Length: 490
Image 1 (tube, one colour):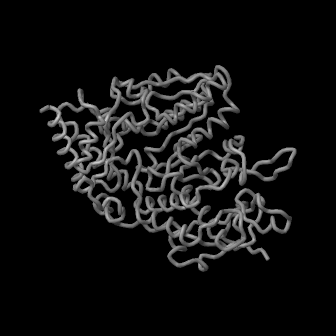
Image 2: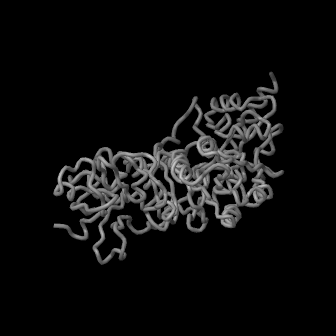
Image 3: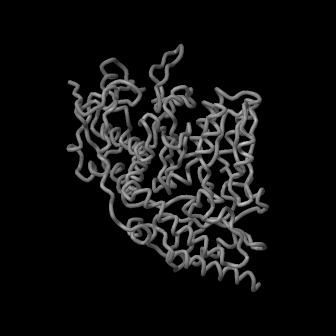
């Protein structure tokens, strides 16, 4: 018999259900009923605590909400120091590279993973690995609950109005492609304008180029101001009656500049345009409130925010998502399939065809919980301190050209520095730094148009995160000076 405590979601029957009675016995997040749901007491104590599994009685549920709120109350903020105080929580950082202690400064490419994330994923694969939304057995119920609980943690982390606004993807690239191939293909036509910028990651350029080839829409690119921030004067001149979409980075992964989202959204609203924000370099480093920002879509990648690879998300306003057609077809994204045609699930299921990245999603939820415990305001303040120190020390190295604005520019600067040294290739710098145990990035950072705009083919990049310290900056600067001296003496 069904009870309020046993209802997880009202969902459709899965692909494998073959009868009415069997259908009623399966759990799915698109539609109807799950007749079995374990309480957290049925799980190992450590597992239940880490995944936040819990059931709420009907009296605890808000009217009109068709999902049990499985996310536990917001955890008390853990008072522990950032920087060196977190080193022990990231096992990978405790190692030597080329007989030198590892200094990891490639965080804009990917972050390292804390024990809180690694252990949750290990527990999933060792203790209750099973497909979600499809089984009445205990492992499937536990897996489904932990998976959907992770979505609610993501929603809380970004202050989404509803868990239904969080669509899981493989990464931010897939999230942008999803919008381009659904809303874009449905709404953009010949002559419509999409505004991008020269600082965009390739993932926020190529999908729109592909769409322009199909629809005839026109791509317009905003350049840089003198201080290498977004040229807002040019941007405002570009926005006009033909503008249908503005898709920009919140924070540049190469310049480090923080774009003025409030002004961008206001300009879009004046002409009825939609706004997409690439938040890959902002969500891991500062508090991002999606309701406050006012964009229509925001994308992020889990691996840059302490979560595993293979998981990212698209946040979208619910009314916008509901108006978008499916992109990929398959299991899970349907309500009913007949030979004559199919009907589709509401968001987010409509956009999540097939078996999802279950363990990775659980890891993403744990990462969001971990960052919430640290307090994103504290994270941002700490990163501003070490990031400013990185910029100031690097600016004193002779021959180094740092790209992007100074830290005191309007909007501030992220804790990363891309730089160029005339006559020395960035890859050579990075390779020699590696011999000192220092990991930095070299290349074009998936921003080839920006590098051409700046007049260089490549740059080296050092990027900080919650576990980096000023002492590591000192090690980096000393090694960089030695590296440049090596080339000077040749």
